[in-house]
Image (tube, rainbow, N blue to C red):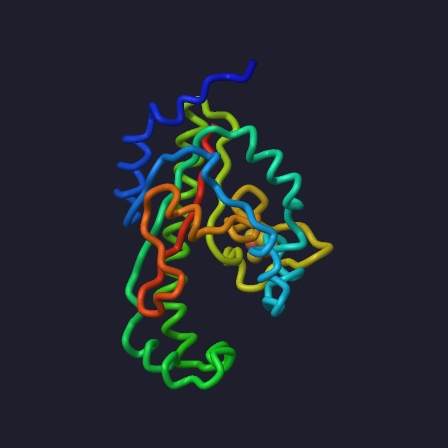
Length: 210
Ligand code: SF4
């Protein structure tokens, strides 16, 4: 017989901590509502992402989806955390002016804005996810495991395939790297998420609690 999961017991403490550290929303919910879909992984390599098989925290260098589904089935409760921010006007102008969105990745003005907004939010989200995982562990939820958003940004350039991670206890795969449909999962948890909105970014992290 499995152990009783008391992730809900600490819910208000987790949510308070998340908000104090800068989350715009957070929710404890049933882990059965987490959606894993092979099509999320498909989008990592068709069209191929520049981090695919480069970052140690990105596919195909992370756990296969079948294995992750088996792991997920052992969890009863999870915690989702969001950081939302408005895309600055100067970036929206570049987005609307671009005939091919791929050109944004070589647009210095756009990339500077990206660093000043996305990276700040992503670093905050990483900090919150790691802190909540540690808090859960200290409360006896020994299998608590955090996933963040996007590629690992702890190093300017990843050590790369065949090398050891430089931050083995800090680096985390993203939810999407694990094949999680972030939008469906956030909505199932009762939090807002609009994939087609170009003027507001919502980053999501997940902590599997118990
Ligand atoms: S911590 Fe550095 S080496 Fe490790 S996955 Fe992240 S970027 Fe790569």
